[in-house]
Image (cartoon, chains in turn green, red):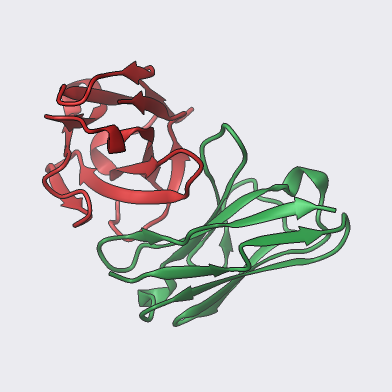
Length: 108
Length: 119
């Protein structure tokens, strides 16, 4: 199983600042089959990024993904209050697919 | 419009059986994988397994293999997750989700609203 470790556990950022979230895999992720999701309390997750760096439909360009192999990053530039949520990475390159444990982004 | 609508909350006793559903509309059900994701109270997301309704090809996480059954009925565009004997540790919200394309190696772009199962 390809385990994903996200850091930090919690990130506190001021509005307008940049948030950088990390996702590290225990094995190389095939073909950059890595996604990022946002989940707000009481809601289903929402797809933000797939293929490590492609934004999903309707996702603002302040969200960007990068990385390959075992190290991936989600960057939220110009943080807004509505970005307060838990963010999960997921690999879908090798079965079983796996999720990271999540990073909680708080607005200062 | 693509929609995944899950069945309502359930309260069950240990040892009872349960089958929850995920009714889809707005796209060709047979052509996309549907997966199930568990979220225990206050915890993160766990991938349980996935099914391709077109040929019933099913892949499961070893963590859930033998504990749940994933199935689909093409005639009514609905996927299912079922237990034969529930445990207290099955208490969680269960989400169904659709892949972005018919390929196995794609992310989940559409999600159901979740079904709360309390045991």
